[in-house]
Amino acid sequence: MAKIMNKYPKRKPTRLKEYDYSNSGWYFVTICSYNRSNIFGEYKNIVGAGLVSARNNINLSTIGQIIDNRWNDIPNQYENVALDQYIIMPNHIHGIMIINNIDKREEASPSPTISDIICSFKSKSTMEYLNYLKRNNIHMPMHIWQRSFYDHIIQNNKSLHKIREYIVNNPATWDNDEHNPDKKGHNKSEGAGSGLNY
Image 1: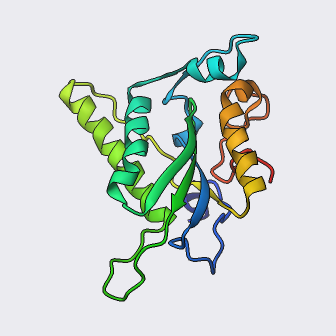
Image 2 (image 1 turned 45 degrees about the vertical axis):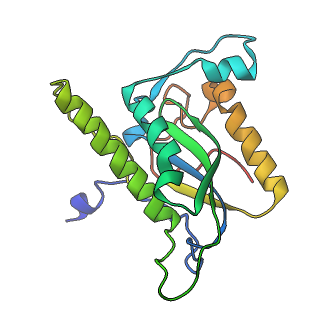
Image 3 (image 1 turned 180 degrees about the vertical axis):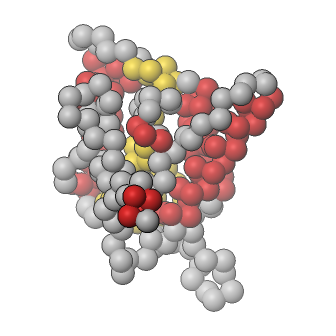
């Protein structure tokens, strides 16, 4: 039994126990691919390319393109949810999500939590990719997502600015990114966070 229990890495809880994640607010989320595999695309570093060019050097794979479309479709699924800055990297996605106030009357539908939104996003992107494989007669069963995700409540403009800057700069710092499997000391555990120190 002990061997079975130790099969998966221990995950550090990242959510506040008493916080209502359906509350209006700004949230920074990081979602990683299964085992941090580089399946979302490929980033080719060009020395002196600059930030804009660096971002454009991320060539999204088919699953990466599906993820991009599904992420941008989130506001169409949830009328009170908006998106801010985001980036899809070879094995993870960083994004800022805004949950706006909704009708709090008892008869109103409950507001989705961050977990609800991310769970739906992961499920829909996975199903769309599996349908793509089936349509093209590609036999390549695979896991796409790690089981959990990392989130951070953005509490002020200073933090928001720092996170936006981090997201924009992420492609240019890929060589030293904690999510990069080619980096020395890379950690595949699900307990690793966003890579940003607040």
